[in-house]
Length: 332
Figure 1 (cartoon, rainbow, N blue to C red):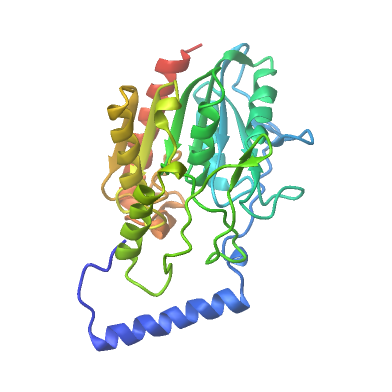
Figure 2: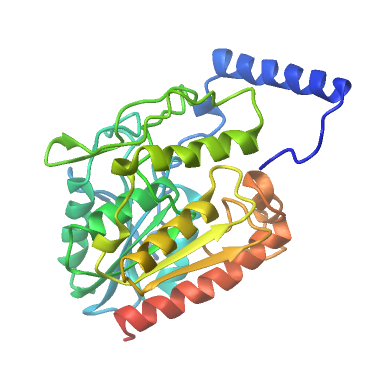
Protein backbone atom coordinates (compact mmCIF):
# COMPACT_ATOMS: atom_id res chain seq x y z
CA UNK A 1 0.00 0.00 0.00
CA UNK A 2 2.90 2.37 0.72
CA UNK A 3 5.08 4.05 -1.87
CA UNK A 4 8.17 2.75 -0.06
CA UNK A 5 10.66 4.87 -2.09
CA UNK A 6 11.69 8.52 -2.28
CA UNK A 7 9.97 10.29 -5.14
CA UNK A 8 11.85 12.50 -7.59
CA UNK A 9 10.45 15.80 -8.86
CA UNK A 10 9.25 14.31 -12.15
CA UNK A 11 7.49 11.45 -10.40
CA UNK A 12 5.96 13.82 -7.87
CA UNK A 13 4.54 15.98 -10.66
CA UNK A 14 3.13 12.86 -12.30
CA UNK A 15 1.44 11.89 -9.05
CA UNK A 16 -0.04 15.37 -8.70
CA UNK A 17 -1.41 15.16 -12.23
CA UNK A 18 -2.86 11.75 -11.49
CA UNK A 19 -4.44 13.09 -8.32
CA UNK A 20 -6.01 15.90 -10.32
CA UNK A 21 -7.31 13.41 -12.85
CA UNK A 22 -8.83 11.28 -10.11
CA UNK A 23 -10.45 14.37 -8.60
CA UNK A 24 -11.92 15.19 -11.99
CA UNK A 25 -13.34 11.68 -12.21
CA UNK A 26 -15.00 12.13 -8.82
CA UNK A 27 -16.50 15.45 -9.89
CA UNK A 28 -17.69 14.53 -13.35
CA UNK A 29 -18.07 10.76 -13.16
CA UNK A 30 -19.13 9.41 -9.76
CA UNK A 31 -17.36 6.29 -8.59
CA UNK A 32 -20.73 4.54 -8.65
CA UNK A 33 -20.22 4.20 -12.39
CA UNK A 34 -16.73 2.75 -11.85
CA UNK A 35 -18.04 0.18 -9.36
CA UNK A 36 -21.40 -0.68 -10.93
CA UNK A 37 -24.13 -2.28 -8.87
CA UNK A 38 -24.43 -6.01 -9.49
CA UNK A 39 -27.63 -7.93 -8.83
CA UNK A 40 -26.68 -11.41 -9.97
CA UNK A 41 -29.72 -13.51 -10.83
CA UNK A 42 -29.29 -17.20 -9.98
CA UNK A 43 -29.81 -19.79 -12.67
CA UNK A 44 -32.99 -21.72 -11.95
CA UNK A 45 -31.21 -25.03 -11.50
CA UNK A 46 -28.96 -23.73 -8.71
CA UNK A 47 -30.91 -21.08 -6.83
CA UNK A 48 -33.66 -18.51 -6.61
CA UNK A 49 -34.11 -14.79 -5.97
CA UNK A 50 -35.71 -14.08 -2.61
CA UNK A 51 -37.61 -10.82 -2.21
CA UNK A 52 -39.74 -11.16 0.90
CA UNK A 53 -39.93 -7.43 1.58
CA UNK A 54 -37.70 -7.62 4.62
CA UNK A 55 -35.21 -10.09 3.08
CA UNK A 56 -33.60 -9.55 -0.32
CA UNK A 57 -31.07 -12.04 -1.61
CA UNK A 58 -30.28 -15.18 -3.54
CA UNK A 59 -30.83 -18.60 -2.00
CA UNK A 60 -28.65 -21.53 -3.05
CA UNK A 61 -29.97 -24.74 -1.42
CA UNK A 62 -27.57 -27.64 -1.18
CA UNK A 63 -28.56 -30.49 -3.49
CA UNK A 64 -30.76 -32.98 -1.71
CA UNK A 65 -30.35 -31.15 1.59
CA UNK A 66 -32.78 -31.75 4.42
CA UNK A 67 -32.07 -30.34 7.85
CA UNK A 68 -28.47 -29.62 6.89
CA UNK A 69 -26.04 -26.76 7.62
CA UNK A 70 -26.91 -23.23 6.50
CA UNK A 71 -24.86 -20.08 5.93
CA UNK A 72 -25.80 -16.40 5.78
CA UNK A 73 -23.29 -14.77 3.42
CA UNK A 74 -22.89 -11.00 3.01
CA UNK A 75 -20.57 -8.78 0.98
CA UNK A 76 -19.18 -5.35 1.75
CA UNK A 77 -18.95 -1.89 0.23
CA UNK A 78 -19.87 -3.15 -3.25
CA UNK A 79 -23.47 -3.56 -2.11
CA UNK A 80 -26.13 -5.53 -3.91
CA UNK A 81 -25.52 -9.14 -4.91
CA UNK A 82 -22.11 -9.16 -6.56
CA UNK A 83 -20.35 -11.83 -8.56
CA UNK A 84 -17.47 -12.31 -6.09
CA UNK A 85 -19.70 -13.47 -3.24
CA UNK A 86 -21.92 -15.30 -5.73
CA UNK A 87 -18.96 -17.50 -6.69
CA UNK A 88 -18.34 -18.18 -3.01
CA UNK A 89 -22.01 -19.06 -2.44
CA UNK A 90 -21.95 -21.50 -5.34
CA UNK A 91 -18.76 -23.16 -4.09
CA UNK A 92 -20.28 -23.56 -0.62
CA UNK A 93 -23.49 -24.93 -2.11
CA UNK A 94 -21.51 -27.54 -4.03
CA UNK A 95 -19.86 -28.59 -0.77
CA UNK A 96 -23.18 -29.23 0.92
CA UNK A 97 -24.18 -25.90 2.48
CA UNK A 98 -27.45 -24.10 1.85
CA UNK A 99 -26.51 -20.43 1.44
CA UNK A 100 -28.49 -17.21 1.61
CA UNK A 101 -26.49 -14.44 -0.07
CA UNK A 102 -28.20 -11.37 1.37
CA UNK A 103 -28.16 -7.81 0.05
CA UNK A 104 -28.44 -5.00 2.58
CA UNK A 105 -27.65 -1.75 0.76
CA UNK A 106 -27.44 -0.14 -2.68
CA UNK A 107 -29.97 -2.50 -4.27
CA UNK A 108 -33.37 -1.23 -5.45
CA UNK A 109 -35.56 -0.49 -2.45
CA UNK A 110 -32.61 -0.51 -0.04
CA UNK A 111 -30.53 2.33 1.44
CA UNK A 112 -28.42 4.17 -1.14
CA UNK A 113 -25.57 4.64 1.34
CA UNK A 114 -23.83 2.29 3.74
CA UNK A 115 -25.30 4.27 6.60
CA UNK A 116 -27.93 3.52 9.21
CA UNK A 117 -28.33 -0.13 8.21
CA UNK A 118 -30.38 -1.91 10.90
CA UNK A 119 -28.63 -5.00 12.23
CA UNK A 120 -32.12 -6.47 12.42
CA UNK A 121 -31.83 -6.82 8.61
CA UNK A 122 -29.42 -9.71 9.13
CA UNK A 123 -31.46 -11.19 11.96
CA UNK A 124 -34.38 -11.40 9.53
CA UNK A 125 -32.09 -13.05 6.97
CA UNK A 126 -31.03 -15.65 9.53
CA UNK A 127 -34.66 -16.24 10.57
CA UNK A 128 -35.62 -16.78 6.93
CA UNK A 129 -32.72 -19.18 6.39
CA UNK A 130 -33.45 -21.17 9.55
CA UNK A 131 -37.08 -21.61 8.55
CA UNK A 132 -36.12 -23.44 5.35
CA UNK A 133 -36.59 -27.24 5.36
CA UNK A 134 -33.11 -27.64 3.86
CA UNK A 135 -31.57 -26.05 6.97
CA UNK A 136 -31.16 -27.25 10.52
CA UNK A 137 -31.70 -24.02 12.52
CA UNK A 138 -29.18 -25.17 15.12
CA UNK A 139 -26.41 -25.50 12.48
CA UNK A 140 -25.97 -22.04 10.98
CA UNK A 141 -22.95 -19.80 10.42
CA UNK A 142 -22.43 -16.29 9.08
CA UNK A 143 -19.74 -15.08 6.69
CA UNK A 144 -18.90 -11.44 5.90
CA UNK A 145 -16.44 -9.82 3.49
CA UNK A 146 -14.77 -6.44 4.15
CA UNK A 147 -17.36 -4.00 5.59
CA UNK A 148 -19.62 -7.02 5.97
CA UNK A 149 -17.14 -8.36 8.52
CA UNK A 150 -18.27 -5.59 10.87
CA UNK A 151 -21.92 -6.63 10.64
CA UNK A 152 -20.98 -10.29 11.01
CA UNK A 153 -19.20 -9.67 14.32
CA UNK A 154 -22.01 -7.42 15.55
CA UNK A 155 -24.62 -10.08 14.79
CA UNK A 156 -22.54 -12.84 16.39
CA UNK A 157 -22.47 -10.77 19.59
CA UNK A 158 -26.27 -10.74 19.62
CA UNK A 159 -27.32 -14.07 18.07
CA UNK A 160 -26.52 -16.99 20.36
CA UNK A 161 -27.77 -19.53 17.80
CA UNK A 162 -24.86 -19.04 15.41
CA UNK A 163 -22.22 -21.77 15.56
CA UNK A 164 -19.34 -20.01 13.78
CA UNK A 165 -18.37 -16.94 11.77
CA UNK A 166 -15.90 -16.35 8.92
CA UNK A 167 -14.46 -12.88 8.28
CA UNK A 168 -12.87 -12.04 4.94
CA UNK A 169 -10.48 -9.04 4.86
CA UNK A 170 -11.72 -8.14 8.35
CA UNK A 171 -12.16 -4.86 10.18
CA UNK A 172 -11.83 -4.62 13.95
CA UNK A 173 -13.86 -1.45 14.44
CA UNK A 174 -17.02 0.25 13.23
CA UNK A 175 -15.83 2.52 10.43
CA UNK A 176 -17.86 5.49 9.12
CA UNK A 177 -20.67 5.22 6.63
CA UNK A 178 -19.84 5.21 2.93
CA UNK A 179 -21.22 6.11 -0.49
CA UNK A 180 -19.82 5.42 -3.97
CA UNK A 181 -21.21 8.76 -5.13
CA UNK A 182 -19.01 10.60 -2.62
CA UNK A 183 -16.28 8.15 -1.53
CA UNK A 184 -14.18 10.94 0.02
CA UNK A 185 -16.95 11.96 2.44
CA UNK A 186 -17.45 10.59 5.95
CA UNK A 187 -21.06 9.69 6.67
CA UNK A 188 -22.66 8.66 9.95
CA UNK A 189 -22.70 5.26 11.59
CA UNK A 190 -23.16 2.41 9.12
CA UNK A 191 -25.17 0.31 11.60
CA UNK A 192 -28.07 0.73 13.99
CA UNK A 193 -29.43 -1.56 16.68
CA UNK A 194 -32.97 -1.14 17.95
CA UNK A 195 -33.11 2.27 16.31
CA UNK A 196 -29.89 3.59 17.85
CA UNK A 197 -26.74 4.40 15.89
CA UNK A 198 -23.68 2.38 16.87
CA UNK A 199 -20.55 4.33 17.80
CA UNK A 200 -18.17 4.58 14.85
CA UNK A 201 -14.67 5.91 14.23
CA UNK A 202 -14.47 9.62 13.51
CA UNK A 203 -11.97 9.92 10.67
CA UNK A 204 -12.80 13.53 9.78
CA UNK A 205 -9.42 14.73 11.07
CA UNK A 206 -7.49 12.57 8.61
CA UNK A 207 -6.57 13.94 5.19
CA UNK A 208 -7.65 10.90 3.20
CA UNK A 209 -6.28 11.93 -0.21
CA UNK A 210 -3.13 13.57 -1.50
CA UNK A 211 -0.70 12.16 1.08
CA UNK A 212 1.41 9.04 1.51
CA UNK A 213 -1.06 6.12 1.57
CA UNK A 214 1.07 4.19 4.05
CA UNK A 215 1.16 7.16 6.45
CA UNK A 216 -2.60 7.64 6.06
CA UNK A 217 -3.14 3.97 6.86
CA UNK A 218 -1.07 4.23 10.03
CA UNK A 219 -2.93 7.38 11.06
CA UNK A 220 -6.27 5.65 10.59
CA UNK A 221 -5.16 2.67 12.66
CA UNK A 222 -3.89 5.02 15.37
CA UNK A 223 -7.40 6.47 15.67
CA UNK A 224 -8.50 3.19 17.17
CA UNK A 225 -6.34 3.81 20.24
CA UNK A 226 -7.89 7.27 20.60
CA UNK A 227 -11.47 6.02 20.07
CA UNK A 228 -11.67 2.60 21.77
CA UNK A 229 -15.44 2.86 22.04
CA UNK A 230 -15.64 2.20 18.27
CA UNK A 231 -13.75 -1.09 18.51
CA UNK A 232 -15.58 -4.37 18.05
CA UNK A 233 -15.34 -6.48 21.24
CA UNK A 234 -14.39 -9.85 19.80
CA UNK A 235 -14.61 -11.35 23.31
CA UNK A 236 -18.38 -10.94 23.08
CA UNK A 237 -18.48 -13.26 20.06
CA UNK A 238 -19.11 -16.60 21.77
CA UNK A 239 -18.40 -18.80 18.74
CA UNK A 240 -15.24 -19.84 16.85
CA UNK A 241 -13.92 -17.26 14.39
CA UNK A 242 -11.90 -17.79 11.20
CA UNK A 243 -10.34 -14.72 9.54
CA UNK A 244 -8.63 -14.45 6.14
CA UNK A 245 -6.59 -11.39 5.15
CA UNK A 246 -4.17 -10.22 2.45
CA UNK A 247 -0.92 -8.51 3.42
CA UNK A 248 -1.05 -6.59 0.12
CA UNK A 249 -4.66 -5.43 0.63
CA UNK A 250 -4.78 -1.85 -0.70
CA UNK A 251 -8.40 -1.17 0.33
CA UNK A 252 -7.73 -1.22 4.06
CA UNK A 253 -5.25 -2.79 6.48
CA UNK A 254 -7.11 -6.07 6.86
CA UNK A 255 -4.14 -8.04 8.21
CA UNK A 256 -3.22 -5.35 10.75
CA UNK A 257 -6.83 -5.24 11.92
CA UNK A 258 -7.06 -9.03 11.91
CA UNK A 259 -4.03 -9.16 14.21
CA UNK A 260 -5.65 -6.61 16.50
CA UNK A 261 -8.71 -8.87 16.70
CA UNK A 262 -6.48 -11.85 17.39
CA UNK A 263 -4.51 -10.00 20.10
CA UNK A 264 -7.63 -8.73 21.81
CA UNK A 265 -9.14 -12.21 21.80
CA UNK A 266 -5.99 -13.65 23.35
CA UNK A 267 -5.91 -10.94 26.01
CA UNK A 268 -9.54 -11.67 26.89
CA UNK A 269 -9.03 -15.43 27.06
CA UNK A 270 -10.86 -16.23 23.83
CA UNK A 271 -8.86 -19.04 22.24
CA UNK A 272 -10.96 -19.95 19.21
CA UNK A 273 -9.90 -17.13 16.87
CA UNK A 274 -7.72 -18.02 13.87
CA UNK A 275 -6.14 -15.60 11.38
CA UNK A 276 -4.80 -16.77 8.01
CA UNK A 277 -2.63 -14.08 6.39
CA UNK A 278 -1.48 -14.39 2.76
CA UNK A 279 1.60 -12.37 1.80
CA UNK A 280 0.91 -11.70 -1.88
CA UNK A 281 -2.86 -11.37 -1.69
CA UNK A 282 -4.96 -8.22 -1.77
CA UNK A 283 -8.61 -7.50 -1.05
CA UNK A 284 -9.68 -10.15 -3.58
CA UNK A 285 -7.82 -12.87 -1.70
CA UNK A 286 -11.04 -14.09 -0.06
CA UNK A 287 -13.73 -16.13 -1.74
CA UNK A 288 -13.98 -19.12 -4.04
CA UNK A 289 -10.97 -20.52 -5.93
CA UNK A 290 -10.22 -19.02 -9.35
CA UNK A 291 -8.15 -20.96 -11.88
CA UNK A 292 -5.51 -19.42 -14.16
CA UNK A 293 -7.75 -20.12 -17.16
CA UNK A 294 -10.65 -18.19 -15.63
CA UNK A 295 -11.41 -14.78 -17.16
CA UNK A 296 -11.33 -13.33 -13.64
CA UNK A 297 -7.73 -14.42 -12.99
CA UNK A 298 -5.94 -11.30 -14.27
CA UNK A 299 -8.39 -9.04 -12.42
CA UNK A 300 -7.56 -10.54 -9.05
CA UNK A 301 -4.71 -8.05 -8.57
CA UNK A 302 -6.88 -4.93 -8.93
CA UNK A 303 -7.09 -4.46 -5.16
CA UNK A 304 -3.57 -5.53 -4.24
CA UNK A 305 -1.23 -8.48 -4.61
CA UNK A 306 -0.56 -10.46 -7.77
CA UNK A 307 -2.98 -12.68 -9.69
CA UNK A 308 -0.94 -15.69 -8.62
CA UNK A 309 -0.82 -14.59 -4.98
CA UNK A 310 -4.55 -13.94 -4.81
CA UNK A 311 -5.32 -17.23 -6.57
CA UNK A 312 -3.19 -19.09 -4.03
CA UNK A 313 -4.97 -17.34 -1.15
CA UNK A 314 -8.36 -18.17 -2.65
CA UNK A 315 -7.43 -21.81 -3.15
CA UNK A 316 -5.83 -22.38 0.25
CA UNK A 317 -8.21 -20.09 2.11
CA UNK A 318 -11.30 -21.78 0.74
CA UNK A 319 -9.93 -25.16 1.75
CA UNK A 320 -9.52 -23.84 5.30
CA UNK A 321 -13.00 -22.30 5.26
CA UNK A 322 -14.56 -25.60 4.27
CA UNK A 323 -12.57 -27.48 6.92
CA UNK A 324 -13.55 -24.92 9.58
CA UNK A 325 -17.24 -25.08 8.69
CA UNK A 326 -17.23 -28.89 8.71
CA UNK A 327 -15.69 -28.88 12.17
CA UNK A 328 -18.18 -26.35 13.55
CA UNK A 329 -21.38 -27.24 11.69
CA UNK A 330 -20.83 -30.93 11.02
CA UNK A 331 -21.28 -32.82 7.75
CA UNK A 332 -24.36 -34.40 6.30
